[in-house]
Image (cartoon, rainbow, N blue to C red):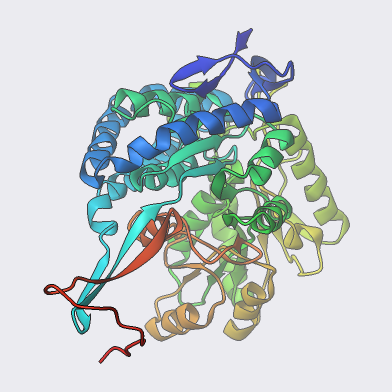
Length: 499
């Protein structure tokens, strides 16, 4: 049985709390490792190490900090296969999906190589008689990130890359369900030249989370996970005077207009709804066809595609469409929600409840499900299922379809499939959701734009990556400066207004 560690001060450190969590192989249902759960004292030690190392790192000029990230990108590419395999082994993703997880994090690191440009301040000369004013962005000190199981490579890099580029030290508390890749990333950062103590990985549960929220040295916190926990972290972190950004749950709608290319829309829905077993906060979980004819054509296209999906372990080859969900509890919760959909009157067009994979009967696999005639009062519509379940809500008109997305409490992502530019433009302008796709099913922005949802999908005024990241991980200082032009006699006792 492998016993994992924390990563503190440039070393793998065994846990001392005596508490551990099981790291499962989701494909087999077997325990493959144990990960230590840090105590408040262990978290405090990591913070003290980070606080001691951070001032020297902040004094390194941004160009040299960026060179560490440049080398890190090279190492990520070198170890891509190794990282993807470790990720798949603990999460259950297919290998191509796991490599994509690493790649989308890598792209944010590439953007952060531009730190010298992003950290430039502003200058105004002659703001008054002999007076200059300038502002500069300075690091916060020690930052922390609490990251989810579903993207164990991408989301940590979305957080620690800009934080470190800005001159901060960073405490990463990854998910205890798949902690190996975050530990590997910390090793690679130091191989790239990052000083010891600047990136620490502390594994843990709620005790570690609360220690982060309450620690007086930690200045900012990033979080991605469920909305109830996002609300908890945001409220407690802000009440402790910290800068906090939290991203929560989602229920992403895709509207299909009558003029849409139905084959394109069906392909998009299958990939966006069932990829990664639906364990994505940007997954499409609600299809909203406009008009019964559109709905009937869509269902006709979807059914054969869904029935052909190949479900299996990542070791079964790159033609596997999706793997297991992350835990037995997740599997049971998905199947419970599917049953509530049946009980509440939705039509289960594709029924995956009896899915079993030969040789992997103890794995956490869930068959694909497709519902039709779902209504907004049903649990499967209101709840983020986080599994391979697609619900179809029929709308009579475009306005009704728009209303479904706008009225839902979540506002992470949405999409519309249409050939009509006026409809697409109206949708993009009016929708109250943070990320919008037009004939794009999963509109995750590229690294140089920002990622963030609205309503109960996002808490805080700044998004992840892009320019917002450099604002989040720095504070602005403004200086007003005047230098006397020669020897002056006496003092001035009146306050002169600036001309």
